[in-house]
Image (cartoon, rainbow, N blue to C red):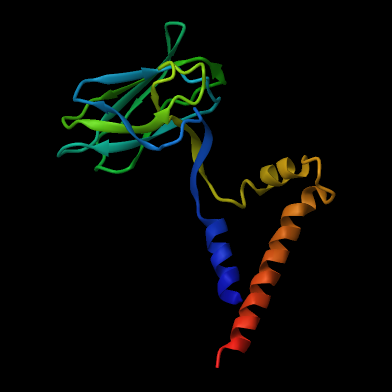
Length: 198
């Protein structure tokens, strides 16, 4: 029982980058390959205010560090730029950006491979009709805010959203009630297993 509670606590306390929004494209495959110097430009529906980094799914197709440059423009004006100094090959690359002061609709996001090895970007078929690739394929663009957070930090927001459900008679108490019931269920299950064991 204590092990289960401790495990839940560890999960809730894990701190990860603060996600702000995305272009709602799932990472189902590596869909765009960029050689050195090539770039990919897309027009997502929006970029959220205070976005300070862009997370991309990247697969290196050669030897050498992954280097990316990102620029965001709107109506011909540069909104923000950023780049990586060179990261080891990884499935997730975070490109730091100058924070975007406010939410902007229909920006143009360009990703350039400034490294020496070809890379592939993760994504899937277009998920939004406003996407710049018009129904072919799109890379997933995931915007991050400054800092890190865990599930406890966003519990108020999650609870408030759950409380707005039409068929929810418990309001903001629904999540705590479910948490207690889950722990009790685990405890009963472990007790039954202990009785069945010789």
